[in-house]
Image 1 (tube, rainbow, N blue to C red):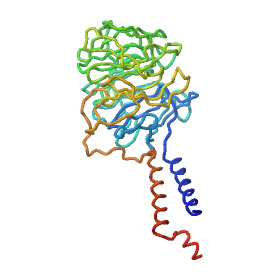
Image 2: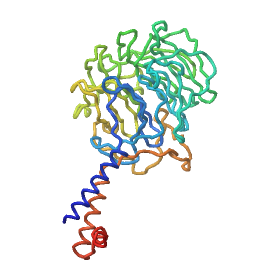
Image 3: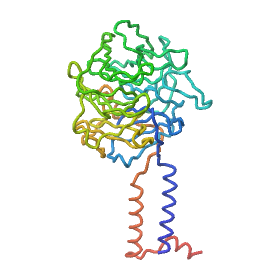
Image 4: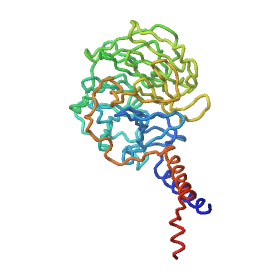
Length: 419
């Protein structure tokens, strides 16, 4: 039994060493970005507790079931962002090969000072490499607190935002980035221009209409029923007043667009960083005018008041990550799961039974790389989860069985005897 104790202690120390090396426990954060590529939810940047900046790139594996209270995060060892950034926007290319990181509050990792030298960084998903692309075209001003969308031709649309210095005004410009030609363009539109806006929701519908609402304009919150619509086919602005329930004005909230045309919003706050109501609502874009409502089933086990989080849609799950919890006054480490099929918060995530590469989270298309394409050629740090404990128990059980029934002499004791 003394040997068994020593063996267990040895394995215990080895497990501690492995876990300290391999398991990744990300710090809570706000104002980060998140995208989905090939069934992985990737988290980029953000601000940690005490405003500590983050450059890690890590992900949650969506091909495996998990409970939202027991998450196995995975760190991409060579995927660190080239700069610290928050309140930026990240968009995935149509072929799911590249992440475009645009704008935000960027800080040089060496000097720790504000750095607006590059408006765009790109990340190659298959080689885990960040680059600074060469972009031609118009001279687009640096912006923060923006949300970008990409259309079915590969053009990224960036609207509004906050200027990066006191001399640069806040914006209501519409800028486009052609990802095939890598060229910026400032669209010169004069009719029906919306107000200066930032921290809004942006969703592109299947008909090419970009739906904007919420956020703030020069420090004043915009009404959630005042919808701004941009037609990417005609390059025209129009406006709509939505019907339905009253939804508190807010910013720093998150939203997802469902395949059947509903935009679901989660959380948000006032300019004084206080709670808003409701914490969850949906905008039906199938009606004209659009209509706000609250799913009755969502009131059970409802979402807490949070802001500065992110949300992504993966099949029937809206996945809400991190942020700040106004009810507990703490940075949120939880991942919330909202099932759009029955409009309820759930705790268990289960991938589709017929598993296939996930659709583009923005366009809901099936454009994905070839099945033979590599996934992360660089090594990953994989969280071990509870599997290690099971392996240890099995090993100990086998050893006890051999000792008790097979009378196998311990190799360690035998070697000691030979000495």
